[in-house]
Image 1 (cartoon, each protein chain N blue to C red):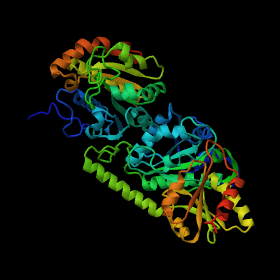
Image 2 (image 1 turned 90 degrees about the vertical axis):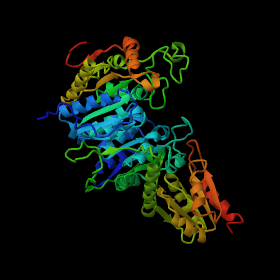
Image 3 (image 1 turned 45 degrees about the horizontal axis):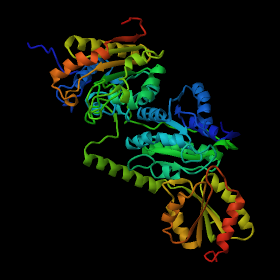
Image 4 (image 1 turned 120 degrees about the vertical axis):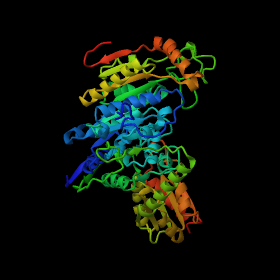
Amino acid sequence: MSEKVLMKGNEAIAEAAVAAGCRHYFGYPITPQTEIPEYMSKRMPQIGGVFLQAESEISAINMVYGAAGAGARVMTSSSSPGISLKQEGISYIAGAELPCLIVNIMRGGPGLGGIQPAQGDYFQATKGGGHGDYRNIVLAPNSVQEMVDYTILGFDLAEKYRNPVMLLGDGVLGQMMEPVEIKEISSTPTEKPWAATGMRGRGKPNIINSLFLKANELEDHNIRLQKKYALIQENEMRWEEICTEDAELIVVAYGITARIAQSAIDKARGEGKKVGLLRPISLWPFPEPPFARLAKTAKAFLTVELSAGQMIEDVRLATRDAKPVHFYGRTGGMIMTPIEIYQEISKILESKEGK
Amino acid sequence: MAEVLFSRPKALADMPTHYCPGCHHGIIHRLIAEVIDELDIQEKAIGVAPVGCAVLAYDYFNCDMLEAAHGRAPAVATGVKRVHPDASVFTYQGDGDLAAIGCAEIVHAAARGEKIVTVFVNNAIYGMTGGQMAPTTLVGQVTSTSPYGRKEEVAGMPIRVSEMLATLDGPAFIARVAVNNPANMNKAKAAIKKAFELQLGGHGFCLVEVLSICPTNWGKTPVEAVKWMEEKMMPHYPLGVFKDVQGVGK
C-alpha cells in the first residue's frame, strides 16, 4: 500500500506491522484492541505468517518471548487489564534483552475498570511495570498515521537496542478512522547472531536467559542494562512543539489528549492568549530538553491527561519545579472537551502567576 | 586396543551439575542427550528450561536453550516452534512448574497439538524451594507446607497429568515412565526417543512423564527413596502409554 486509505487505528497498527515485516502475532481478545488480533487472523495466513490466539495474555507474551528469542520480528497487543497480565513476561523480555513490540490500547481502570478510553497506564508503561530495574521504550502516537509510523519505528528501535517497545495508545485512537499512508518499506532483516535458532553449525549454543544467580554477575548485568538505557535516553527522545516560542503557558499532553488540547490552544491563540503545546512522543525516554528550555521562558505549565495525574510527575521532574505545574484530567473513560481545557488555560493565565 | 564403550553424549555439556546426590535429573538429562545424539538433531534442537530444580538445564544441554518463566515453558516453546517449524523443540519441566502454575500452558499446548516434546519430571514435591507440597504430592505425604501430611479435604487429590492430558484430542503421544532401575531406564529412553521421532515426523504434542526421586526433600537415602517411589508413587501414578497416535495401546 502506498496511497492514502481510510483505516481504523487498530487495523492500521496491524497492517503497519505487516509492512514492517512482522510475521508472528500472539494475542488474546480484549476491548478496545480486539480489531488487532482480528485483522491479524485474516492477514497473517495470506502472507505465510503466524497468527495464534493464545489461551491467556500470560501465554501470549511468553509466546512472544519464545518467538523473539528464536529471532523473529514479533508482536502482541492488548488493553490495560491484559497488559497487567503480561508484566511478568515483559520483565523477562527486558531481562533477556529480546526485541518485540507490545501495543497497549488503554482503557479505564483500576481493576476491570471500563472499556472507554483512558491514559491511566502511564506509570505502568514508563516506570517498568513488572519487577526489577528495567525500561520499555514507550511511543505515544496521536493520530492513526502516527500509529502506523511508530509501529514501524517501534520494531526498528526494539531490534536496534534489543529491548521491548510499547506503543501506548488509547481507546479513541484504536477505534477512530483517519486517512493513512503505509509506505512500502525496504526493511533489511536485522542480523540476530544471538538468537536460539538451533546451532546449525554455529559450534556453540545460544542461550536466552535472564537468570544470574551470582549477585555480582546480576549487578554487572544491571549495570550493562543501565548503560543501554542511558544510550536510549541520549538518542531516542522525541517530542513535538507547537507555538511554544512566545508561550506564557505550556500545555503538556500526549496521545489523543494532545489533539483535544490543540483545539483549545487554537481557540486561545485566536484570542491572543500566549499558549503553546509540548507533546511528548517518547514517554520513555521522557523528552527532558524542551522542558528545561521552556521552564526559562514560560510562566507556567498545564499537564492534561486522561488520568488522575501521572505524567505530571515527569513534567515536574523535567522542569525541576522551576515554574508552577497545573493539572487537568478526566478518568474512567470520560473525555475532556476542548472547552474544558480552554477554561483551564484561561483560569491560569488570569491568575496571579499567569500575569 | 581399548574400545570406548561408554562416554558422555555430545548433547550433554561437559560440566558438573548442581543436582543433589541420588537425584534422577542427571539420568533424565542423559537420556534426552543420548536421544538427541542418536537422532542426530543436536544442530536443530532447541530446549526450554523451567523454573525449579532444572532451572539451570540450559547449562547442561549442549544445544540452543531458552530459560522460561515459571510454568510458561510450553508457551515459550510454542513461540520457538512457530518460528522454526523444522527445529526439534522440547521443554523440560517439573511438577510444580507444569502441574501447578503452568497448568493452563501445558493443557493448551497439548490441546493445540503443538509440535513439541515435553519431558515432565514428577517427583511429587517442590525441590528447588526446599520441599513444599506440589499438585502431585501424595495424600499423607509430609512436606514443608503439608507438615501433617497432605490432607484430601484441604488440598485435594494429586493430579495425574498424563491421564488428564490423554483425554484431549491434540496429543500424539503420552507416556509415564520411571528411571528407578536399568530396565525402566531403557523404557524411559525409548519413550523419549519415540516422542522426538514423532516430532520429526510432523506429529503433534508429545509428553513423557518421568517418575523421579527427591532424596533430599523426601528425607530419605537414595535407596530408600527408590523404594518409596516404587511402593507409594507407582500405585497412584501407574507406568504406561496413555496416548499413541500410532495406535500402540498400553
